[in-house]
Structure formats: C-alpha cells, structure tokens
Image (spheres, rainbow, N blue to C red):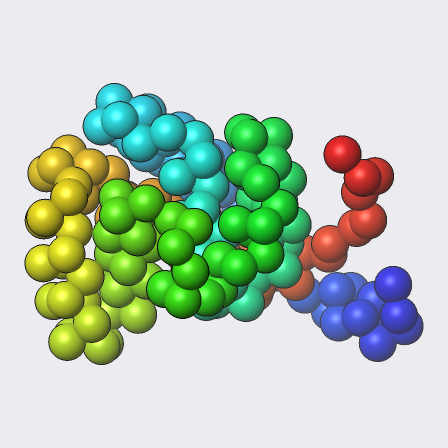
Length: 162
C-alpha cells in the first residue's frame, strides 16, 4: 500500500469498529435481507450482481473486492463480471437480471425519477412483488455498507487467485 493511501487510512475512523453495536445491527439487518431475497426466489448470483453493480456506482473498492469473490464462489463467470458496468449493452443477462439491475441502479440514484419510474415499470413486467421488494432491500443494504466502507476507507488487500 502506498504511503499516501496508508496515511489516509490512518486518518480515518473505522466506524464499524468505533461503534460496534450499530455495525452489529447493520449485519443483522443484512442477514434478514439475504433471507428475504432467498425467500423471494433471488439466487445468490443475482444478489451478488446487485451488490456489485451498486458498489460500482458508489465506487466502493472494499465491497467490490468482497462481492466479486462471493459472486465467483456462487458460480458467476468472469465474462459477466467484466461487462457488468455495461450490462445494458450485452445479451449476457436475462430479462429478470436486467430488471433487477435497473431497479438496483434506480434505488442507488433515486434523484433520477425518470429512470426510477422506467426501472420500476420494467421490473413489474418480469419480477413478482416479493422479488421487487427483495431487490430494493438488497440495494438499500449494500448502499449502506458501501457508505461504511467508503467513509472508513477500509483497505483492499490482495487475495490469492481462486
């Protein structure tokens, strides 16, 4: 890690460590959200795609590192992970995945009301009410964790190749 990055990390409060009771509550909420997603029929790969796409939008290196490994462990392939930022320009994602990704993006950038309405309308065509709710909750949860990691400057360390 460069000296500049190390100094930035030293200057930050890891809020998850500083306020462990709040972070534990977040983790418990994330566990509930994962269960809601599973109960709604969202498979682990789709949940990880949502986590990754939201983390890409937010620029959260720590969550991108964590969830790219999780997606690969769940069976996602490298090609789809590589083109995820441009998912609209490929045919690699199913209509259901596309609807979920658009809805997750709209949840992450709620100020774009036109995109939010379009995403919601598209989601209604291919997702059940339970799936829509689960997608939004997954996006909300990863958005919150992105903020924790970004503002704490959680370091990303090298991991061995899978």
